[in-house]
View: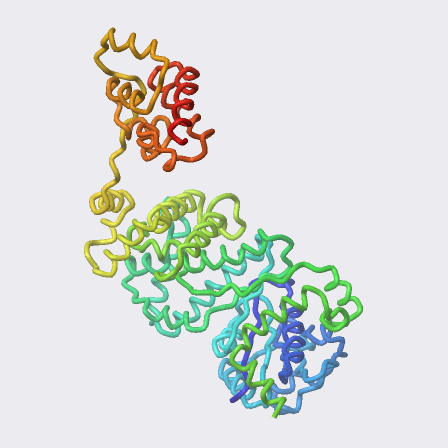
Length: 305
Length: 208
């Protein structure tokens, strides 16, 4: 079996994508999986600091400029069974990557010999990220309980739906869809709106392919929750996506706010390494166990044999 | 979107096979989401939309939260009979009353209503020796059925008949019997103390 591809994305920056990527990787390595993390944030690499590793110019830039194969860029992290490929740090050079190149990248990643490959994306639904998200086996959508971050999560979801619809619709129907939606936003309605039924009525779109989007739903993860109320926002987001967008998402869980996180980031050491027995570690363990259920037992069996 | 286009299960976002407690749980979650100032809602739904959503949620729960109505609703859906529009709470509750008639409520007598007979009134007012049969006589004279007496006094009709037949084996300890007799006497407009004292004296005699 090839590597399982997990992408970590978010609508807004600063909600903890990198922190969650590194923590998931460390937890998976504790569960005896061989893990590779890839920093694909095109606005600037920072996954290395989460692991306390120095910047390296042997990074994705070399792969995308055809100077080195992907496998040669892998460097070990300071955590056992965990490896990383560093991201762009020469942002003064423009990053022009063709979509075909991106598909090639995904294929190359899949060929690597790891149990899990975690890809840390930058904020927002950039056109470069969307094919990666589409190809991944699990997609984690990170948000914080702040209203601004939740709002941007919805913007992210909308971009995602449009991206998927644009693959199946013709250009006319997409344009029609954009117009009807824009018009709809301007008017105030007193009955709740629903994507699917509204578009069905207004433009004759068939939305059966929305079902195919629902195959591998986004896993909503709320970072920095401080109360049960914050945690329950996950169910609210799920309900909104279901009712408004007709998009199935799963609420995976929430990560508590913990001062240890920023404290250990000052020391450039992953919090799960410096403080391995916090509730935080338990929450990550729970998530990883839930998401590796099928491989979990097989992996321990492998160890025994 | 019209409320009726979606099944109540869609509204509460639960599976059709969900347990009753899961439905309650989902309802509470949905209510939390759409009522109040939820930061996850305001940027998507206007206040009016949220209110409408809340109304649908309440309506869905009024059917799915009730076992009888839910069964009826499930049955209708599985048969595919009628449109979802016909399956509103009001229609279902009317129908459930047809299939499972509500028990008729007995109207308890609050006031005694009987033709007065001065001779009898005097006889009962001055009576000093009270037995079960005399209590029964008074009850029948005042046109109160054992059932009605039971509803008003909260003494079971089984005990009432045992008191009237003076059967200690069918009754609890004497102190309770005294309480029952007191209730009965009070309702029948008799002197509680005289009735209780003399009835209990006779009652203990029977027991021996």
